[in-house]
Length: 381
Image (cartoon, rainbow, N blue to C red):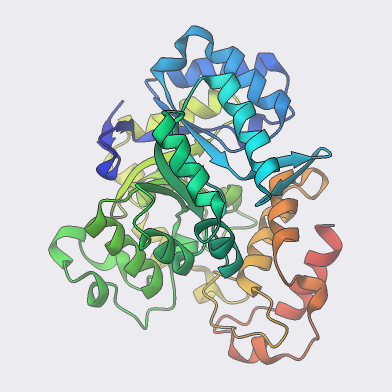
């Protein structure tokens, strides 16, 4: 295993981490097999965002006396009220679920302010007692470092600028990062030699700004959604002419500034093994540039979440709705509870679409946005 410093936390984390969302609702034996494989390969960071009591207990039991061999990301604000995963800012609820997590693991290495994706999320965390609760947890030694999770680069920048977080968990993959090649990332990074060449052409300038800010302020990044919830690995769902491999997705994420670890979603020991095989891969196996440069029909008809379609008169975050829809389409019969929760947490959803068509007239990729809004509302109930 290889290790990197996680920003200014002083912690050295394995470049491949263990994302365990996919063992939720699985039997203990499968959870133990997956956790055992992670530790066997030298993984020392695990994300436990799931608020379900059963899966948390399974992970804690699987670790047993090996708890101190790993660092755990535990999320403050992830709740499971009435067996429905949700984002909570209600302090009694927040405390109940986080203190349950503490009771299972003893302490949490990275206390993550959960899901800072909107202005409301920002205000309800950083301008309330929520943030003060996290600070008190750190003062008490219940958490060792304060982090946060986000999918929105603008909100992530705003959170970092408070000075409170030391690290963050962020969604990183080429489809989320890329725009049409009318922007050049090094206009924003200003350090072409360090980050190297044509591979970054077309990156969203807001995301480029975020990565640069993380480098400047030593905010370490742990990566979620490196595989686009499987979309980038799928011949049927990838926006590219050929799908990316696990190794290519991991390499893309690890070559972003400030990234320390990719939390590879794994549900079996075999999937853990596939992720860590990245360590033995040659340059050709890891090279993603050709796949990206050969984007299928220049992404025609495929949403790359660039938000050129905005603003929406109904205030729908169109990219977010389609992102969750794309993930749900991968397995419509088994949509993850977190995807439903994230979708329903949006202030405006697909059902709020008025079919005005202003978004479709601005979309550079010809995406049928109105149809996508209707499908999202029907599928992600």
